[in-house]
Length: 246
Length: 246
Image (cartoon, each protein chain N blue to C red):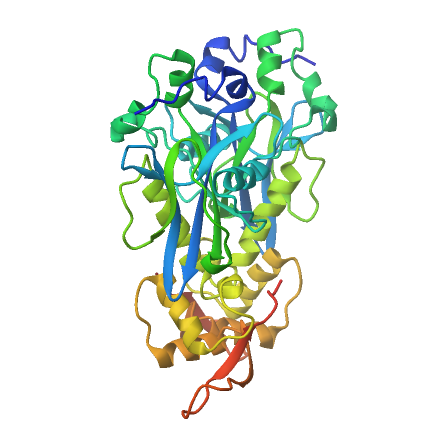
């Protein structure tokens, strides 16, 4: 396996970056009732990680998150939002993932020092419709970039599992009072479409009657006409999200 | 005015700190229907700032926030929670607050370099009952540490005004679906007590009937007995918060 060296990641580039602070993006994708996480496999390791990277000395942190995501995946999300900063001293203990360090040239002192330094990372989050995304491109450090089902995560680097769980918690807390499905569902949708989305986010089946009662009470939705062309059964109502309340 | 020098803030101490990352605490206090922010006045400047500080190289970031707050104010809040990280390139432009730099000895290169470096800061937040707090102690950099009414903020350093506003927004978003008053109100309280708290947080008067209807619908409260000993009028009901839903 070819190791990463300073030739690929030059001292001049490292000099332009803020040391000790990174960004990581948790991109949750939704398709047909299932939730996925966008992950990259680090070359030849079997270890996966979130799309992440560093901040230039003259760059806003929010811009760095958008740039990193675009560089690594070709995706462009203006609605990427910050959810938490992970600053535990031991969060990036190299002993947890010895294989990762093997992919770099440990003889290259400057590169090794950069990699093994303590990093505080800020997590950014987006919930997207997979069918609306373009093709995924792995970066030079990774062999593949894929949508992985959120319920069957592979071996993850450092504390990336905790970062994903924190993003999921963030989403679960929002689901009953924010129109989180707005970018995922079509403009009008049935109560069943919405229930499938909530079930994917919460990771459990919900009671149909209770769900409907709760959603109608939430003041998030407005009911429109009945769906047409759905066969001989009584057509379900179509709903849309109300604009977010201030 | 005596300037701050490396004698007070030694190179050995700076060496033990993570460069470029700070923590700032927005401590909102509640008393008798009014909301206050805990602020320190930087010696001789007329400029105020949040209680904040730096992170030791071997210290978790969350612990640093707790330590900084305790060091600066004597207050001990295990319920300090992170709300946002501020990483804009220009957030700490010294030109905004030239007076602040005058309080340090600019001849002292090491100290000046430390102070003028770019900092990303993580904001921590707590909402506390002022009457339950101990006496406040200013730190060596500040002449006073005080509760300042949130609606009449003084001149603030750097982007501290934005940090406070972001914390307030965070609180306003929570007020209708989390029991934010739990640590502020007594165990049982009247609907009027709760309304006064919400009015302080939202910064506006609320309609009594609408507020009561909304709160009863929120599933946050449980109604108990009527208040006793309140005079000849019909006694109001007492409420308590339900344990937070998962």
